[in-house]
Structures are given as structure tokens and as C-alpha cells.
Length: 189
Image (cartoon, rainbow, N blue to C red; front, top):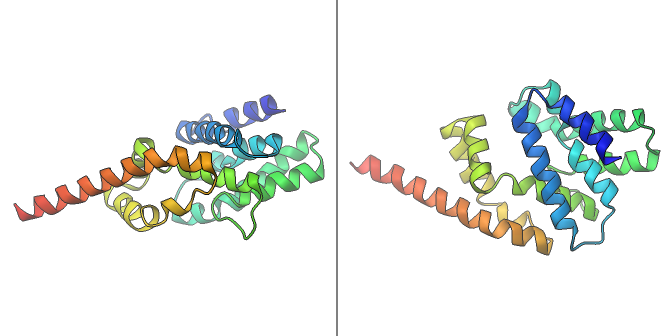
């Protein structure tokens, strides 16, 4: 089943290579985190492949960013219905996708892993470059300083997710400290 979904996602996101690369990394992170958890791999992997499927026909902006998890969930339902998945599977995948931006109370382990995997991709060198290339330097720094740095350590509750995040968190903190210091130093000159 995964190969059918990979084919669909690859084709749908072929014009958006950054989103496709992000999706592949999220799938990889999800599989790594899942090695130490009791998880339904089919639900997790389908959810990871489809978590950002809405971007194939939408442009990224602050409004679409707010609704993309719900939009991707709706589109994932349609895709899974076309390939005759059961209603139970469709509901689990759909709810997992919706939760990848904001976890509900008492999330399933699949929700938590997808959330962590998606958030891992916001950290480190790739995360920084994606933020700056999408939002520009000024807005990107605001996102890093206001939305990521204060919250990032709370995003990871699985052991493996936290282990993967540790180095990326260190790198992002180092980058932010150095960048902010250089800005302050340049204003003194």
C-alpha cells in the first residue's frame, strides 16, 4: 500500500520539490521514531506521506499555513477512499494528519510521532534554510525567536524523538545566538 501512496504523493508534489523533500524527511523521521514505540506502522506511514498533500494545489502563506493540516486531512480521505481503504483506517489517518500541527488532549502514539517528525524538520540547518527561503530573513527570525525557540523542547516526548531533536535544538540555539549577536554587534559599529 505504501508504494501506491508514494506514487500518488510523488506525482502530486512533483511541481513542489521542497514539499516533497520535506515529506520524505518526515516519513523517514516517523519510521525512526517508531522503532522504539508500539505503533500501527501502516497508519503512521500513510499519515506521514499524506500529511502535507494539500500543498500540491495551494500556495504557502500565513492563512493557508493555519488550515493546511485540515485541508490535507480532507484530501487524504479522498485519496484513501479511491484506493478502497476501510473507514476505520481512513478515520485514523485523517485524525493523525489533523494533529500534526496541534496535538489534541490524549493523542495517539501515531499522532505524537507524526507531530514530532514534522517538527524535527523545522530544526537544524534544513529547518533554518526552509524558514528563510519561505518567509525571508526578517520574518524567519521572528518565527525562530517567537515560535520555535521558546517551544521546541516541549515538542518531543518520545525518547527517540527527543534524541533526534537534541542535536538540532543545539544547532538552532547556536545559530540564533550567533545571528542575534552579529546583528547587535553590527548596530554598535
